[in-house]
Image 1 (tube, rainbow, N blue to C red):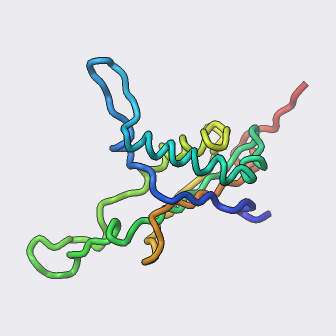
Image 2 (cartoon, rainbow, N blue to C red; image 1 turned 135 degrees about the vertical axis):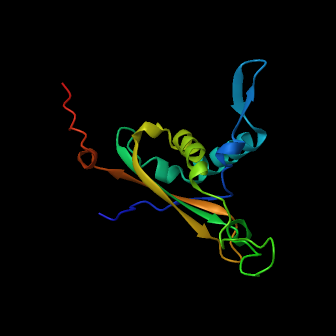
Image 3 (cartoon, rainbow, N blue to C red; image 1 turned 180 degrees about the horizontal axis):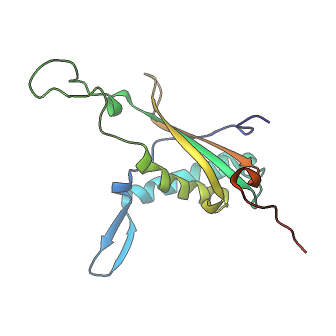
Length: 160
């Protein structure tokens, strides 16, 4: 079986980092999504649900899944322009301190809502941080595939 039997879900734009997802109201003792997170969630659901319904219909709500995210960041978001200039204050590394890991949880929550499968069914996964090509927008490609529960040591279910 092909590792990714279904075509990827491609979404233009990137999820906010975990630092920009929730706000806490200490006075009311609640937390809620930031405007940025609300806007992302709304755009994601509004795009994925209608445009990928053919993929969503193929997913078994009881299966276990592997989910892989490929984030495409603008070149300026991941590379330091001042690296290697040899001047005082130049960047010490070619790569900016920007990670993709802190974008995964919120994106997984949005994906779960869009496909109607709780993310407790996501048993394996990963990500890759990519440099977008010159004419490519920042975007995320999401690969999802059912996996055999036995791969994760989950015993087969016997139903009466």
